[in-house]
Amino acid sequence: MNNEKQLEKLNILLVDENRDSASLILDQLIQVSHLIKTDVSILQSLTEACHSLESNKYSVLLLCFNSPVHSIPESITLISEIAPEMPVIVLASYVDESLGCDAIQAGAQNYLFKEELTGPILSRTILHSIEHKKQLLQLSNHNETLQAFAKAVSHDLKAPLSNIKMISELVIEEVGNSLDSTITDMLQSLPVITNRMKILIEDLLHFSLVGQRGLEPDYISLYGAIKVASKLLELQIRNQNATINIGHLDEVYADGSLLTSVFQNLISNACKYVKDAPPIINISTKIDAGSVIVMVQDNGIGISEKEHTRIFNPLIRAVNTADYEGTGLGLSIVKKIIEAHQGRVWVESTPGKGSTFFFSLPQADPSVSSGFLNPTSLQSDPAY
Ligand code: ADP
Image 1: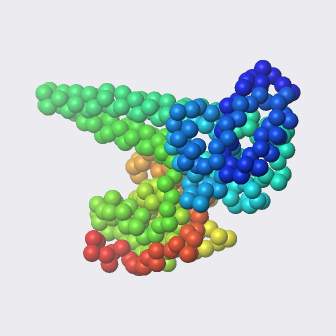
Image 2: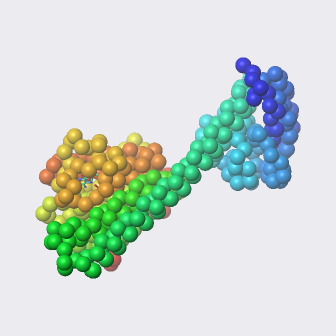
């Protein structure tokens, strides 16, 4: 069904090295001129397209070009850098779903196979891609606004907390001796409370921002992420005389810095939720159906079965909060990061005996493996 908006003239850039194929596509667009009004510019190379994009604005780019220098994903990345707001549709000369998936992952809105192409399919795909790109841009603007809002709120909430802390310390210093001991006790607890509140605000900010910058995945060794996380927790590990044993680690395709955050949360919890014995943490991986399953096992207090799902929700704690400090955000950060990698996180645990946290990640392609060697214990590392 037509409406006024659909009949707005669309400025289309068609990049096709093959003149016959380009005029075929043009014919198909003419056939559906009752569905979309178009003004089509045809160029034959990516270089020409990039030049043109620098000075012209197009409603959509139809990319049929197979550059001898750049792959389709590389071409899309190059184009998106010059015209980030323009939707791109890949028209592949041969049926290859993996090429289409690569194109979508690189930022194309859609892909079609030339041999299946008809005027109505093309017009529908163009209109859908323009709308899809518009919604993506709106979403990204909303996210940026939300991030700025979260940062501003966090900053504005922390300022009065510092004042409360400072004033209470000043009052104790000035008139503490003349006050009733209950009042002094209450005043003395204020810095502790404000400090906890500050940590909660920082954790909430971290939770709201995590994953917002987008993933920067690479073929990485988990040992690197575990080592950095352990270094950041050095004091806690040393104070509690914790041992971290590292077993076999498969390589993964993941964002190393976000994985460090995952291990930091899991190792810190494994050190924190113990009763009498020093923490012993075993970390290893196994392969299951093309995914790497990471296991972080501890000898801590364990978690009752009814809490196994709930603890991954924000602000949920399954312990007596007076016994163990925390904000209830660590595992929800872990979940957010793992789900951004299309993975899953879960726990198996026996109260009083310990817990094993599991998460799945995409496996690294063995042909690009770095052949990293895994030391078996971080305590044997000179840093510990
Ligand atoms: P926090 O540790 O700040 O409370 P988390 O989100 O990291 O927040 O953990 C949520 C809850 O899950 C904790 O309060 C605790 O009850 C439980 N938990 C997490 N890790 C462990 C663990 N290794 N052993 C026992 N309980 C745990």
